[in-house]
Length: 157
Image (cartoon, rainbow, N blue to C red; front, side, top):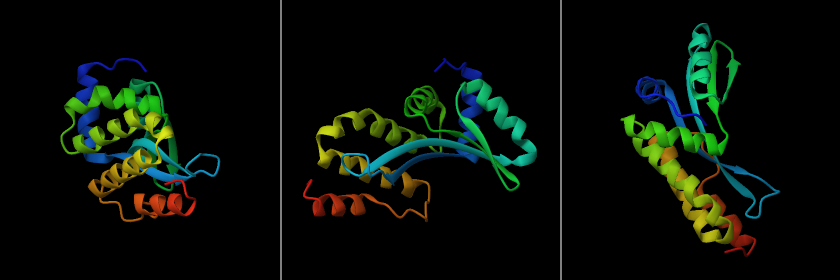
């Protein structure tokens, strides 16, 4: 990912603090060793009539996609290495979502080591739950507790 200039980082930090989400989501993945994946994402939402702002953001960042749903458009960045690189540059300028950014960076940094430790993976799922809590998430169905229970049933932990 390219380096983003300071003025753009300041602009993006304000936008993400207000209209953005920093997400750590646990999803089922039958092809994964632990049967779950922690997916990282960054999302900025605007009314569809302001989609051009999101297109400009995609140009600044250099990655991501824009999807429309009804009268809303979302810029979404999901590629883990891009999320990590972008948050490393952005986090010093965040205020409201700084904690979510730092927690997600920690998850991404430790995720490779969790391939050798189910207990570490569950701990990273707990951190993911914390990110969701900071985001006031109400629809979260798969939590660290669910992961731990299923891994115990599979005798992985």
